[in-house]
Image 1 (tube, rainbow, N blue to C red):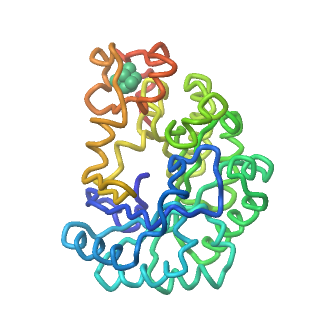
Image 2 (cartoon, rainbow, N blue to C red):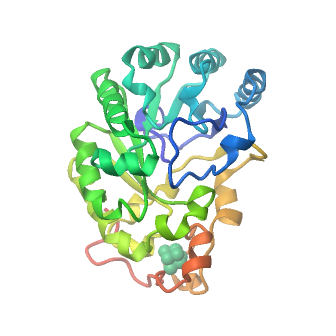
Amino acid sequence: MPPAPTTAALAPPSGRVDLKVGFACNNRCVFCVQGTKRERFGARPVEELRDILRRERPRVDAVVFTGGEPTVRRDLAELVAFARDLGYRTIQIQTNGRMLAHRAYLERLVAAGATEFSPALHGHVAALHDHLTGARGAFAQTVTGIRHLKAMGRFVLTNTVVTRSNYRHLPEIARLLVSLGVDQFQLAFVHPVGTAFTLFDSVVPRMELAAPYLMAGLKVGLDAGRRAYTEAVPACLLPGYEACVAEKHIPRTAIYDAEATIADYTAYRRDEGKLKGPDCGACLHDAECEGPWREYPERYGWTEFVPIRAPAAGGGAR
Ligand code: SF4
């Protein structure tokens, strides 16, 4: 997702490294892109993680600790401190947010050098979030974690995965995020790989049905003065909200995954992860648009993606 403005503020985004520290997780989300990796891969050895952090530091000054769920590692605070001591300026914890409910644990991560937290909230009520995450009590913990972060004055950027179960509630989710004081939120269309691919028919909504709710959710955030983005939804489905397309703002990222390293995630998305349609060449957004995740049109076709031939009435992007 786009970085927080604290360190990247008005400067062009520099690169960052996305470090998957292991695939264990205390949630079992119906849309998990990691699928069965939790059963196939253990935690990445700490020395391997340190080597990656050392190797990448001359090239980047931002690291995202992710997984799996990074907070299930007992040595996460030590890894954060190691990154800080190497000179990483931005150290983000991308998390389901449950462990952040424990204030003392959160304070330990901050003291170790964590500068940003990106918890995930997928519902406006416990029944919805807990259903999607497969974990009873997860909603209460993540909301408590966000409250702790804001009470500590931290910048909070959240992620919400858009699925069949929650897309109609995106405006209510956005209102909750605003009321919690979240500084930036992203509504990310589900990526149909891993568990999300296995459960495709029950998890992946039609984008044209979700788009009005997405835009309504974005409006809630923008009207409240927050930074609001959507990911993996092409601009042709977001008239007037083209500036909220997250891909335009994601910095160059290297991803250390279980089986491979992706040196440039932007190039990977364009070359392998996403697809453009047969009519996209006629669209105003063709040059900068990445298209949807490829699994979506492979299942649903291209009829929803209609080329834009003139800027949206009223000036287009907000
Ligand atoms: S290039 Fe294609 S997918 Fe992208 S906005 Fe235009 S029509 Fe939609």
